[in-house]
Length: 353
Image 1: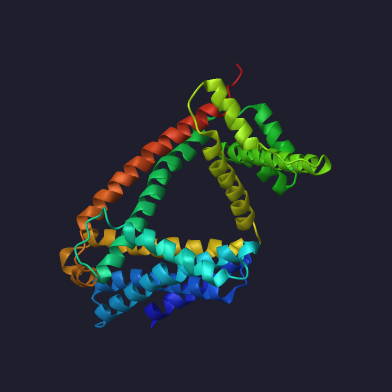
Image 2 (image 1 turned 45 degrees about the horizontal axis):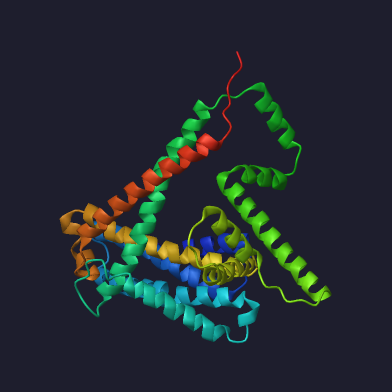
C-alpha cells in the first residue's frame, strides 16, 4: 500500500509546488504533468520491487507503466506543447487546433526519422518507440551530466581560487542596499549569456526602430522603400570583403528569419508560456526516466533484470551505454572550453601586497 500510494502523494506535492511557482492554471497541464511524474516514480519503484522480489504482478505493471509513459511522451505532451505554443501566436488563434496537429505531425516525422541511423532490430513494435525515446533521453542525460561534471568542481574550486579583497566586500555591502531584483539583473548582465542576450536586444531594437523610421519616411514622402536594412547591410559587407554572393536571394531569407525570431521570442515571453515550460519539464522528466531504466538495467545483477529485459524487448543495450559515454565526453570537453573562455573574459582579481 505504501508503494502504491507514494507516486500519487509525490505527484500531488510536486504538482502543487511547480504549479504555484509557475502560476499554471490550465487543468490539462496539471493532469499531464502529474501523470508523467506519478508513472516515472512508479517505474523506479518497480526496479526496487524487482530487486526485492515483491509483487507477483510486476510484469503487468512494467508493461502498463511503460505503455502509458510512452503514450504520454510521444502523443500527449508533444501535442499540447504545440497547442499552447500556437495559442500564444495571435495570428493562429482561429485555427490553433489545426496548427497544433501540424506541429505534432512534424514532431512525429523527425521523431521517427531519428531512429534511422541507430540500431533498431524490431519493426512495428514497442521497441521502435522505446529505442527512439531512449536515444533522446540518453543524449539529454549525457549532455547534462557532462556539463555538471565540469561545472560542479569549477564552481566549488572558484571559491578557493578567487582572491577576496576589501573592495570586493564593499561592493557586496553596496549591493545589499539594492533590491533583489536589481541584483539578479546586474549579475545576469555580467555573464556571457547575459551579454549575448543584451547584444541581441540592442540589435533587434535598432532593427525595429529603423523599420519604423523608414516606414514613417516612406509614408510622409509617399515613396516605396527599395532596400531594407538587412539587404543594405549584406551589400556593404559583400562589397567590403569582395566575395560573390546573391544578395537579393539571401536577404529575403535572412529577413524572414529575423522576423521569425522576433515573433518567436515574443510568443514565448507571454504569460501563457508557463504551460509550455511545465510540459517541456514533463517531457524531459519522462524521457530521463525511460533512459535511466535502459542504463540501470546493465547495472542490475543478472538474476534481477529478467523481467526488465523481457519488457524492454530486443534493444541494443550496449549501444546506449556507448552512446552515453560519447555524448558525455563531448559535453564535458565542450563545457571545459566554454568555461575556460568565460573565465578568461571575466576580469582577473589580484590581491595587492
